Every structure is written in C-alpha cells, then in structure tokens.
Amino acid sequence: MKIAVDAMGGDFAPAAIVEGVLLALTELPADLGIVLVGQQEAIRGVLNGRELPQNVEIVHTNEVIQMGEHPTKGLSQKPNSSIGVGFKLLKEKLVDVFCGAGNTGAMHVGALFSIKSVEGVMRPAIAGFAPQISGKYSVILDIGANADCKPEMLDQFAELGSIYAQYTGGIERPRVALMNIGEEEQKGSLVAQAAYQLLKVNRKIHFVGNMEGKDFFQDKADVIVCDGFTGNVILKMAESVYDLARSRGISDEFLNQMNYEAIGGSPILGVNGNVIIAHGVSSPVAIKNMILLAKRQVESEVYIKIKQALS
Image (cartoon, rainbow, N blue to C red; front, side):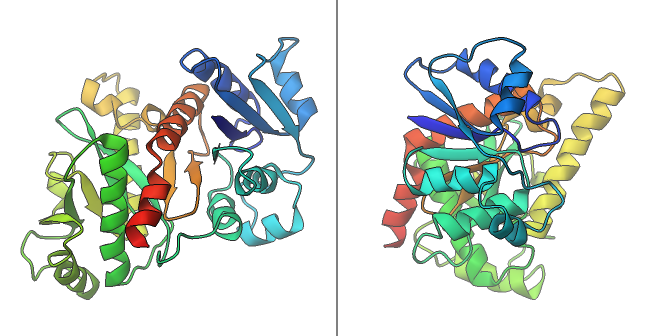
C-alpha cells in the first residue's frame, strides 16, 4: 500500500505534515509506503538533518495552491502543484490514496476532474464523524461539498453512508437518520419532507426516521444525512464545544472526541478512488490520524463497494 500526502497543504505545512508522517510511521507496518508530494527543499528543511525512513519518498513539485485560491483556477493554472500531482499519482494508480490538509475546494474539484465520480453518483459527498455517547462514531454526510441538495441527493447520501459504515465500521445494517427540526414525518423543509418519502421506501438502507439536533450525540443512528450547509455548521459547532471546554480547563473523555485531531480527516465518498481531506489547521497529531484513517479506508475497499452497489 502507498499513501500519498500533500506536504504543502495546510496552515502549518510542511512542518506539521512531515512531523505527522513521522508520527504515523510508528503505528504503520514497515512495508507501507508514504509519498510526500511537495517542494523537496522545504520538506528537507523541516527535517533538520534527519533522514527520512526508506519507506518514505518525496515527489517534488514546484507549485502550491494556496488556501484562498479559486479551486478550479488553481488546478488549471498550477498543474505542477502538490494537489495536482497528488491526484495524477492517484489517477495513474501509483498510490492507493491521496490525502491532504490544503485547499478543500481544490481537493474536491481535483477528485472530480481526475478520478471522477462513480457512475450513477449525482454528487460526491464529504463524510464527517460525529462522536456518540456509546464511544463510537456515526458517519454524517454531507459536511460541506453540497450546500444545496435535492431530495434525491439526500437519498443517495444515505446509501453512500451506509456502505461506508458497513465496510469501514463493520456494521451489518447501519441505521440511517435524516437530520431535521422534528421527528414527525411531515416536519422540516420541503426538501427534507420529500427526502423522507424517498428514504422510507429505499430498501438499500435501514431508515429509522428523522433526527433532531438534541439527539445528535445519542447513538440513535450510524449514518446521519443532511445537506452540506447543515452538516458543516453542526460539526464546526461540535469542534467549538471542545475548544471552549479546553479554554476553561475542562478535560472530558467524550468532549475530547470532538477535537478535530481525533479522526484527522474526512473522506470524499462517491469518487473512483480514495481521497481524504483534513482540516486546514491540522497539527502533526491530526495528520497522523488522517494517515491511519487513509490506511483503513484503502483496506476496506469502500469505493469499490460503492461502484458495485450502484452498477
């Protein structure tokens, strides 16, 4: 297995990326390869004379898509950027997964332009992870790729999330809930009401109905479906709860799971390959966990399972 990492992506790149890779290596098998994609001189500079392990290689690029750049323009005008080259490696199957903490839009657009959507997928979604009081995580999608969704898209997100939960989480029949402002079937926006009608007759999923915000952490579903606008707001609010607790000197096992570092990244579901997007402010610990998540996703072959399910 080879995991490609954007060494130039993120607010603290390349230092946080390189240190995160070195941390991950202590928990990875010796035969797993890491490919650092980025400016070789900058990467070497972070090492301060240390040598990279034999299973880590550098693929040099001389361009960087900055965090504030327009995704499509950045990819087209900077073909030798770390993101552009990373997706080229993934498309040519020289690596098994590409992950990075850089420009989220460029990562998403790069996936759509290079490895493309799985046939039959209306819109790929970014999946997040919501900690539950039971100690496990529920999958929530979408968390930002699609701010506006049609009912049919939400219905398909349920299928994508169910397949992901089944093959990466080992859940035989994942429970699916629709995030809404009430539990009753007739509650919510017109989109939510229409999505409910599709979800309740979808035999590919185990739909358990609507979920209110108060039940978000109560382990009532393994897959939580919503539009990207709602999902992004919910997860960032959860992150802020952890930050607030830490600033007040509160240490709690459950609240600590809301720390973005705990999982490290979010997969794009519905594309022909494995892509993980990490938080722009990722620390070395977050990068380490992103790489461990990438390893688990490759092993699950979840994108292949999605292709088979939709074929």
